[in-house]
Image (cartoon, rainbow, N blue to C red):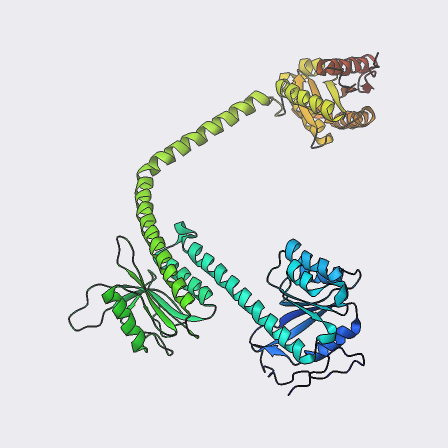
Length: 538
């Protein structure tokens, strides 16, 4: 008879610890995670020692320690798969453990984990009130908890946890099986659908299966065994390789060595075919899946354990769902074929419409370009510049930013035209545009303003910075003579620069100030940059 000494005796001795529970050489699954919550380190040590050899269903225990309710809450948030919590009541506060129970159930929504309260001060939390008011699974005073009772309590809690999680797993499996066959219907052929169905059956039965989904080939010759077209198989090493259309043909059965070695399976499938009723054995099921407007499907599955009544019911539900889904797939196939024929009829018309649309888009793009680009220089024209400059003024006013403009006029341009001809003048204007564009940033906008005048829009640029840009343009133009008819024609430019004065100033007013600065540059000897006088608010 096991020693029933108290596990948490004052002298710390350990008696009555069960040692007869066999340890699995290779665990059958992950360990059962048990959270020990107590502010007394000795309780952790004693509990760990007492449960060191305990296993349940060939799975060992993994003990996790927490020394306060707050620490335990953090552990449970990070690891919600705890099977059991051995929880002290009095820790950082007199009711810390009870508060943690509320958190686990109400805030963390963890209703699967088993909670056992252990207290060294029963008067602080009377058992009757606690067991009624709090969602716990057991209540133990440390003074009554022997090693044997701890063992019994833990095993009972783990069994309860296993049952709860098994029920939840079955519920999830049923939901998956009911929903999955209709997923991605547009991409699913019957062989693909059959493979999905077998995968769902494997999930339902929670383990590897051997299975086939097939359809009868037609009437068999007198005395010959019925033949089937196999749509999909799983776990059948002897199953025939699929043909290019996803089917394979044979007369077959299912057994441990392959699909042709189990006469019982073969007889069951033939019986299903002949009677139109599903059949069940201890560890196998042969299912009839009626399909509207097509031959029935037959499914055979066998697993490594006995089928429960719930398993059989769920497999019949699965067969019903397969029936509806297979009919939908066939109907979708017919609709897809009809749509393909319709697409073939309209394909030429669609191509013509697409080509005409492309031509119209190209024509519109060309017209927009012609309406926005100066034909001589290839830069923007005055109309497009005014649109962009207006938008920049609105943006600057909205966000409290600034911008500047510069006006450029080629010096003595009339002399160039008179002395060398209009072709030389055109070359000079094009070269001035190219050199000015080279001196600007990619965010700046350059346009031909009229005749030999160019205009540039400089966003986010104050007057001093705009003056530097203008000087760079002036120097670059002055240092690059115009090459025409083997001549190098000198060329200079005068520039006027103005910074936008703020929301009260119109775009026309800003350009007028820049033009006045340009005029001043001309008057002061040309080949220079002048800055416009700032506008002072009244």
